[in-house]
Image (tube, rainbow, N blue to C red; front, side):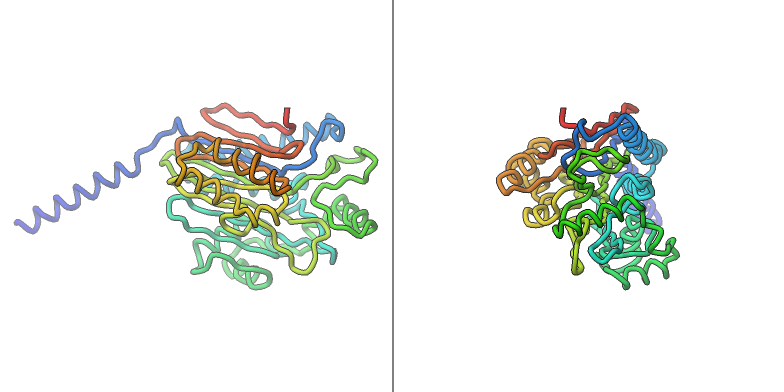
Length: 344
């Protein structure tokens, strides 16, 4: 009888602890996204272009927020949100990925769980339709953190993910962009214009660093971050940017914040941007806004690194600083959503 009583009390304590741990707060659920930063100005925009980007950003926000409203996890929300942007040719991720010097599309992605610090990343893949889903599979269905190239593709196929012909990622606009850059024989970042201020299509708006990302806080108080990119136009020799490098372009920790970065990847890697923001919060007790602005508007500027971030803390506070002319960005919280493009 004593053993039964002890077992009952143990189960009651465990259940109570579990219930407390699973306490929900739907007032805090928040989703923040970005679609790239750079020289994005009104002078290079048309009403049609602006409308297209606003619609795409709003669709991504609503997709992820619906998951959060129904009690879904922050991981599910950021993955679904990023998939929407990967499927849109407007962004340099998935379908809209830029071309390498060899005329291929090589994709990188990463996702991180702020509750457990588990993470997954893939780099240099050419056949995984939604790289962010591949990154999550690495996190949840393997013992590894990062997989690259053919190995990552084989893994994704074995796990039943949608595999496509590399031609799926090709868009004529991106291909012509590569040709212009190769003619100049220099490496440029995504969305480089032709120097004439042309608005011939919805993709050309000056220098733009092409990455998409999302950070979310769910009703259970858990943070997550996800980032996906096609990298740098005309990149060569297996170049990998900041996105799949945890702590650089992607990071999440319930104790501090979730971060997704966009910009010149080499500078983001060297500055360990995402983790630096979290570290300032952990060690200096900075707010998420102060930490993000310290890194993006001060440290990166001093190092001539052009970038932007979205950062979100466990209380639903967020920041979206960038040191370029514009950044595709948006948030949704308490049913209120807003998207923006320009600095002003």
